[in-house]
Picture 1 (cartoon, rainbow, N blue to C red):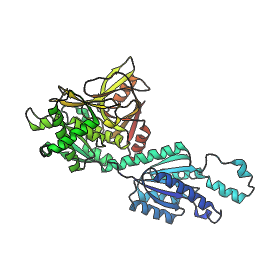
Picture 2: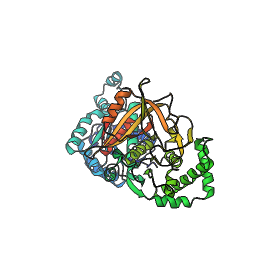
Picture 3: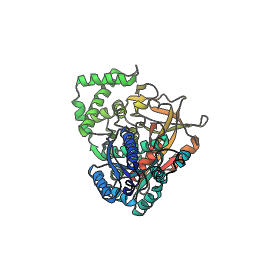
Picture 4: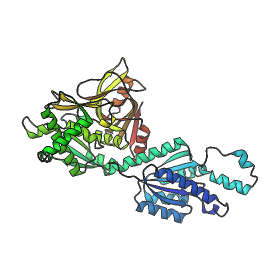
Length: 474
């Protein structure tokens, strides 16, 4: 469930220039059209207010952005412009603003420029390239007005500049999706895990997410309504998505399939974009039959962009959702052990995993006992794809404030634990010991979300958009 992000764009200039320098306005409009086209290619809804070159147009642009409910604004500095044409726009729109200080080229052809020998013509060409002139003025006014902003400096065809712009768009998409995300909370916390307890009010205040408190009796009723035809279809889905072990007994497969169908119905009924769950019940109760057969179904949900976290770890399912929106997965994990000879850390978890980021096929295997939990049933065996990875934890600090804790490392090949759990070997630039110390001292819960690729820069930008502190390990 990715929300279409709506981006505002406006250019700034000085209307006094247009009659002084023939063709200047047309050239600047062309550059802005080029920027608009590239932004549209990023899959956003673009609200383009055009060139703002006087205070009246500034107010009109601000009204447009507010009316269209844009999530973020790109302010393109096309030439020198008065800050009085900038401030009203962002004050009225009241959304994050990124200033694009982008020259047409990386370097002016000085010899060709000076050979023109026409100071009027030369001044007009210079004004096409004097974006940097406005950057300090805009920053000064924004600082004094208390407007949060960010700068991207470079030139129009520069890949690094466009990487930054793409990162900002991705961060805005995450922020927008999190604001509309409905998080299901099913059951209760794992008793005694004090670190996982979450302040749902604080999570709503920071991310804008809605929390839907769900009942086991509703899931039970949905499970009772599942048809044999639905069970058969789900078993076929298991065989497509998983490498189903021959050790899996047919009754266990059918039990898990029935529960998976019920979970699908629960998610659809409440329009959930993610879910945290945990339950134990008592021997012989039908709710225990449900909770001991959820892993396969919750893995399927996670793989189709509805992340599910066990042990009712709400903070971590928020981290998983952020990673999933960024398109890099977000598998539920915790420290498993350290290999001090190979200098790697094992992270993994029992329960649902993100099958879309697996190295090879995902195994569906039987477990004779769910360690630390009641009962037995089917479980997931997988390893995260080898290559760059990012770890993310949503940390609730001592004062209640939220921190995003990030680390970049690599999933590396080597022996893993064949215990019917997700687990992988990870290396970090600072080494296993230093990583474990620095990560732990930052105060996360013992769970984290792991995604493929290095996306720390995007998460830092997300933090800037929603006003959170970040901390990077490594």
